[in-house]
Amino acid sequence: MTTRLSRRQLFGAATAGAATVAGLGRAAASAGPARRLPSPAAITASDPALLSAVEAASLLQSRALHPRELLDACLSRSAAHDGGIGAWIRIYPEQAYEAAESAAQRLAAGSAPLVCGLPIALKDLYAVAGLPVTASSGVLAGNIAAGDSGVWRQLRDAGMVLIGHTHTHEFAIGTATPQVGNPWDVEYSPGGSSGGSAAALAARFTPCAVGTDTGGSLRIPASACGITSIKPTFGRCSTSGVIPLTWTRDHTGPMGRSVADASLLLSHMAGVDVDDPCTSVGPDVPAEGYPLTTVGGSRPLSGTRLGLPRGVADDLPGAIGTLFGGFLDLVRALGGEIVDVTVPDVPKGLLSGDYAEFGSYHRQFADRLPAYGQESALAATAAMASLALPVADYFALERARLRFQHDYNRMFAEHRLDAIVRPGSLTDGVRRDALSDSSVFAGARENYFWANYTGAPVVCTPVGRSAATGIPFGVQLGGVPWSEASLISIVLELQEAQPVWRDAPPLGPSPRRIPEVRVAAPGAGPTATNTDDTGPGIRFVPTTSTAAV
Image (cartoon, rainbow, N blue to C red; front, side, top):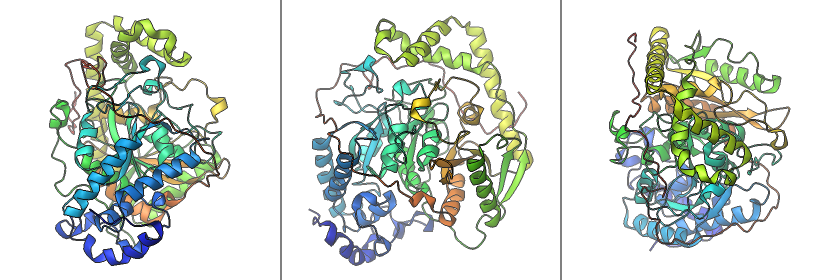
C-alpha cells in the first residue's frame, strides 16, 4: 500500500519523488518529450485540490501523494464552496474512496496509467452502472443506469476516481446551465450545456471532467469559466451510454484547467468502442498518447498558419474584442501567421435534421412533458413535431452537410492552414437573471455549429478575463478531422507563453451538503442509460476529402 502523507508532508516528499517519476508506467522514460509530466520537485501548490491534472499525476506516479489525500482535498473544497455555485448534482464518496484505494495499490505496484488515481467529474449524461443518470431533468428522476458508458469504462479501467456527476443544462438542450453559478461571479452563467463540469474545474473541485458538445457545449462553458476543453473529431471518443441530443452531432470530450490536463484525459478516453462503430473509422489513437509539453524556443509557432474568418470578431464587445486582438498578437509574437479566410456557409436547413433526431429520442417521454423545464418542454415538443420531416428531405440535408465538410477541408488546403481561430464567445458574460432563449438550436450559432457539422476537432483555450465584467473569455482553434495532436501542440505553446489558465477564482465560504448516493442495482435497460437511446442505424463519418460534391 502506498504510504499516505499529510498535506504538510506531501510537498517535502515531492523532491524525493522527482527521480522516480520518469520511470513509471507510460511516463517520460518510455515516451518522447511530448509525454513528460512535470517534475515533482517543481510543483509548489500547498493544497492538493489546487493541483492541475498533470501535476497531480506526477505526484501520484512518484507516490508523493496518495489518491485518498487528493480525493479528500477535492471533497473538502467542494463541501466548503459549492453552495453558491451548485456544480455537483450528486457525489459518490463511498465508491470514490474504494476506487482511490484500488488506484493506490496499482500505483504502488508500478506501471499504472498516468491518470490512475486522478479524481474526475462526469456530466450528468454519462451512464455509470448502478448510479443515477438524470440529465439534470425531472423527466428522469430516479433513473438508474443499467451499464457503463464507453468513455467511463475506459477511464475506470485506467484507474480514475469518480467523484460524482455535475449538472448539465436539462438534457443538454441549452447553452446556459442556469442552475449553476459561474465561480468567477455566481450571478453569471457558466455557459452550457457542460456548465457544471466547467464550473467544478474552475472552482478547483476536481482536476478532470468530461462533457459533451452538440453545438458548442464544451466550448461555451470553457470560455465562460476560464478552463480548457477539447472537442475531438467525431468518433474519436465513444458516445455509447451517453444520453443523446442528436446522434450525428454529439461529441464527447475532455475538459481540464490546461490543455495538458485535457490532452492527458483525451489520451485515455479516446479509442475504439465496439458499442460505437464510429470509433472504428479514424486513425489509431497515438500509441504514446497526445502531447503534454511544449517544444519551446522563442518562436515555437514559426511556420504555423492560422486562418481568421473575415468578420468573425467585428461585433465583439470592446473588452473581449481587446482580448481577442491580444491573442492574435501573441500568435504573431510566437512566430505564427494570421491568414484572412472566407469560411464556407453552414447550409441552411440542417437544423431541421437535428430537430428530427432530437425528437426521435424524446418521443419516449411524450407523456412526461410537465416534468420538463418550460424552455426544454417547448424545444422537445417542437422536435417531436419535426419527425414529420420526409425521409427524402433528411437525406438531402445529409448531402448538404457532406458538401459543407468538403468545402471546409478545401479552405484548409487552399490556404495551407494548420487551424482556424474563432472567439470562444460572442458576448461578454451572460447574467443568470438575463437569460432568454438559450436553446442550442436557437438562432444560427454558426460560431459553434461549423465544428459539429464537419466533425472537426476544436480546442478552446482561455486568454484572459474581461476588464468590464471580470468573466473569462476563450478562443477556439479548430482543425481538420483527426488533427487533435497538432491543435494541442499549438495551444501548449500559447498557454506556456500566456498561462492565464492558472488563474483561480477567489472563492469565499459557501458550504453545501451535496447529495450523496451509493451504488444500487443497475436499471433494467434496454441500454446503459436505462432509456431507449439506440438511435438510427445511419451514422455520420468525418472526412478529410476536398473533392467537389
